[in-house]
Image 1: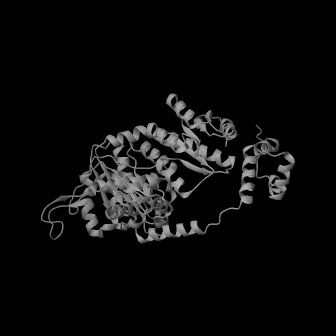
Image 2: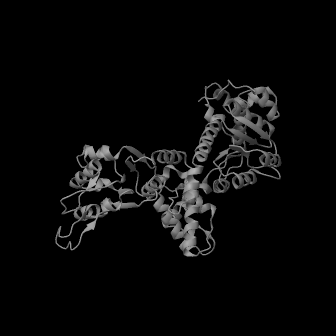
Image 3: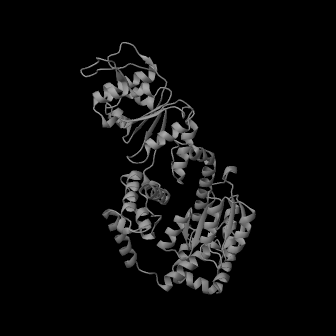
Length: 470
């Protein structure tokens, strides 16, 4: 992919191996980025005092100032800057520690240059989206009724960007997504960003009430409309006049109720049960469902005309399993929230527990994650949430991870040598003279090792790129 002007970024590369710095810098410059490089952590901290970067690519293990120190320094001063850690000593604990500290990605050596290119593109796209949403988040943070949507996921940030764009309009919105993904939170987000933010926001779950109760709740009634109606009562539609009405699980609404709702949308007026006249209303309607309304329309369970009235702008929330990078952010958010509410001192999650949280599939999505953390806070004995505080489903999962890690076969020295030779060749873009020099052997010895490890055949497979020479 050729970089466009908006894709350009300022990148700092830090590695105590000069060759690694040179190779990474070459790749990034070819993508059109502005690159600064340093071969020590101290040098990196010095340049960070003078300049701001979009992305930092740093080796993890360096003398005096390592990659984690650089990561913590960057996140403390410019949280929007992305940091990619590269290491030849990847472990579960170091990966979890890096993600907890805010790393965008964690790459283990040996790596392919194509992998680096792709991760750099994704990181810079993330930075762009974060900075575009900065004012939006600041407004939410300063608003008493702000809806806090916590994410660093690229798909979610694009969705929020679209939500922000359509918020000032009066267009209807249909939010879809699995249960527990935060559909009502997104609806409140749209309301808080709209011109109606100072008016009421009303929410109703259409699947929680029977047909007659739902009609009464939405439309209200006049005195004497039915037995027991001793006084008039306005419904939610009238009560929301000037504001936003959120109807969750809209697919559960009966066909007869759908007709009445369609009339409200088309005529912009509502008629109470038992009334002879209609009342004008001005509402912004946001509907949500965990079902596919197109399938419901095809099956005759949902009116096609109402579907098109609702789905003017469609927003689909991804399940939590598709945005695992948000799990640590959400977990620590819920940890602070429930620890504060319960008056507990729990303020951290141990690495093994975070591994389990990251690997779990969350059929209940964000709601399930919050329940897990709330339970953990309640059961924690000290200030650390541990595996013993998790539900059985997750604690069993951690044991399985530990067993797999224990029985995992360590690579032999021969295998490690083959991997390192492949890594050096890829870093040198298949320049064997340069690779042999880095390896400390002559070209003939390198050729013999390539034949021995079956890498000679791999060179000719077309999988490596030879067009980039240094």
